[in-house]
Amino acid sequence: MVKYILTTLIPWIELRGAIPYAVKNNDLVAIPFIILTNILIFFPVYFGLEMFYVRLSKRAWLKKRLGKIRKKARPYVERYGLPGLMLFVMIPLPGTGAYSGSAAAWLLGLKWKPSFGAIFGGVVFAGFLVFLLSVGFFNGFSL
Image (cartoon, rainbow, N blue to C red; front, side, top):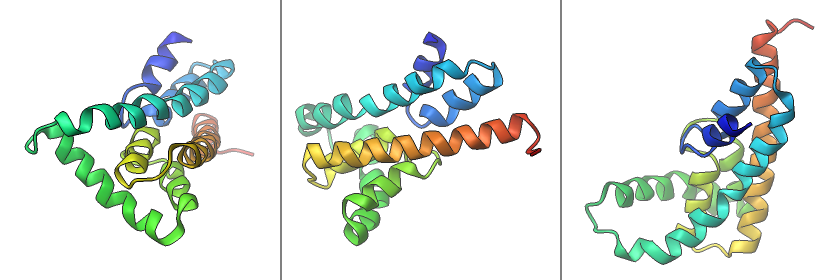
């Protein structure tokens, strides 16, 4: 179980790596814990940025990466609001998960409670999608 939790804590891998890993090992009981861990990533990212963002130098790698996240998420949020943030998180591609969505919520000045709801929904949907794709992949997409 711990190996899946640790895998989901790795930025840009998150549940996109942990769920297939659990499915491959036939450890399906770990999947709700993977999703829960991924949801809870919101709190240290959102509130951590609030505390530490101003201390980052303008040339810091992290500040540049956060700028890219803001730029990537902004169109979703400007066009669709909080459902756009959820959409951004639920696309199971690198750079669009709970870490990026939580950072985008703070960077775009969104309130934490509604943002948490959007991250929650996006992670649950992404987890379900990744689970279905993983099961299909490891079972040869046979019906």
